[in-house]
Image (cartoon, rainbow, N blue to C red):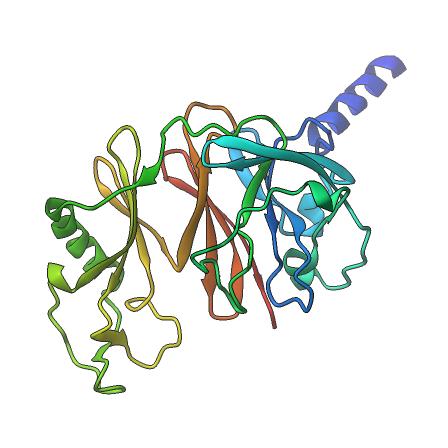
Length: 293
């Protein structure tokens, strides 16, 4: 009887204890941390696969459920592997919970072996300046292929008409001003010709990811980073779905090897920077975001 009770207790502990295993599937980023005096690159563990969901490792409590002391990474870029290296937990004390997602980063075991992809377009700026190097997605399994083959593309006029309606819906509460008349908001009726395609990608199935803004003639009044004057991203599949604003696409890949590509974005807003993962045909989103004060 005692043996049966003991076995039952051990089974319950196993079911309720987070799995801290080297086999955990993780996504990280090789980056130049924002707002640092030194531009030394570091690794930031971002997301972990838990059952069918991706969760953000943005708190001490969540991160404690995974083995992060020493992580072997594969660098993924545009559907291929561009290197392998190891990051190590520096065991740095982070006293405040709110600063954990901002300040927790891992050091590199062999910094000289890092892939160097220059950020020529000066993208991915945030609360501070754009990094010198392109942020590189990291995975703990060799799941770097992009089966959906997301590539830059143009947007045909028929889709721009659809995007106009979606853009109006996403920014319906914006107060618009003309650039020459700051702080004088009034209703503006803008059309397709007033839309500006900031970025566009298409996959092998014909689905699209499009970032849309208004031309500089129009701005949102009284806002540093508002809704109408910041990039709005849309997924064009069977229908059009808004997936967020202030995003910059980093890379796409089938990081959990389920046959569908996940997409990693850089996010930046007022006093907020971080990373966003879109998955399950862009129906699910996980954010790893921090503030500076």
